[in-house]
Image (tube, rainbow, N blue to C red; front, top):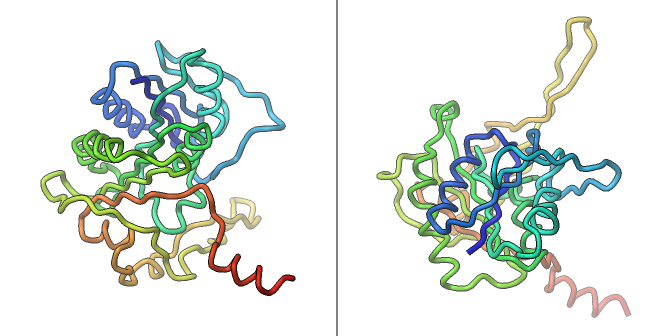
Length: 255
């Protein structure tokens, strides 16, 4: 099985080494095509007005000066030649990608692009806490990742569905199990704008996350609740974002 690995944290990110090890547990035909620079939060952006610079880092390892979406396209349509990958793995992201994160995440986007190309695709992310921020529990993703992927692949991944996997911030022996979840939702205050001043007194701004907005009890059955209880969260996300229920209401209204 040919596997294409990418991420959004960049070609030198430790999580990329972890996803490659996960892929190596599944196959000996593994290729890595990742962004030259950190692309966290770029979502599903595609480089249309800038050229893509390609650098061969080592055998089967390539860096693209572009987004995760660019990387998957370059890998599948150019670098790998005539033989397409049979599986796309994006990650392992340092930090969870749950709830509204899936809209912003470059990790999710890399997997989504694989799904658009008709390939089974997984986004893999590892939650960290304040205590583990500098040293996340990579071993948890490494130990459980291959089997989760095998089990999902055995069930069969629908053509228009991407699999979002999040590992909890705990040691492998503290993982409670695996739960199939739905996308959660935080309260409306989870993003904030932090105003600061540079050395010359000029203002500049950082977009960040409001800690107080993230302490609410998450709804049962969501990705947020699963991670809070030390479960691995597996969330199938559909490419088709049509709101069918509201479409029916609109059909009856807009005549």
